[in-house]
Length: 198
Image (tube, rainbow, N blue to C red; front, side, top):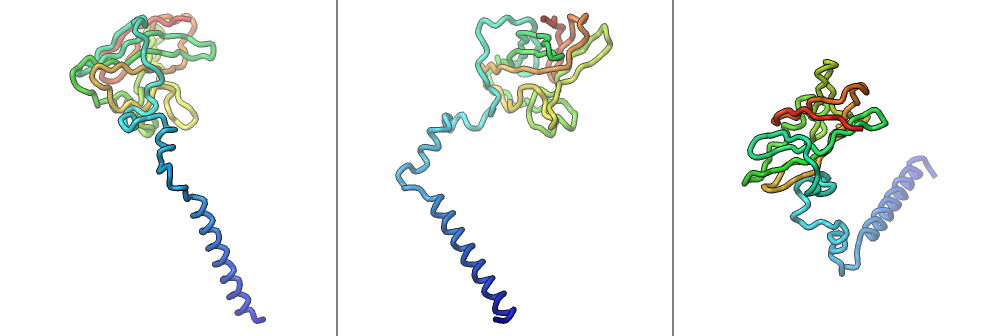
């Protein structure tokens, strides 16, 4: 058998193997035709109305009786309620609260909350523009990030519906132990002085 005939035979065998592989792949993807994709929709647990807005932004509804230690007023009837500012043993401070829309219309200007830093901007809607300011220590603390540059804060809020309250959190490096009061700020909102608790 010449080299030419051997190469031709190899190409033919490769074509047959490829065709067999494609046939198996197509057969494996087929269904019995009875479910019609219904199982997928049921397993996702979301209605078609829930799928678009605020993916991953609502871990739970804010508690009605949560203590509000500060309120930062924003635009168009939107406010940020701060419920706690806690120092953790790991060397960081977590601010917990809720963004509330007391206005009559849905609020869509949430992109401004992420600030202007390129690394934060590249990771979508977030509260990445938040900061803690230590007036006594003359330091500003920015939101912590993971190794890929994503903020350790609430992400994915693309809108806040009229009458809606969305729980939020932001984590910062902890100021020195002696610092008990800091100013909390978020773009488009007023600033507020808050107390750090242990």
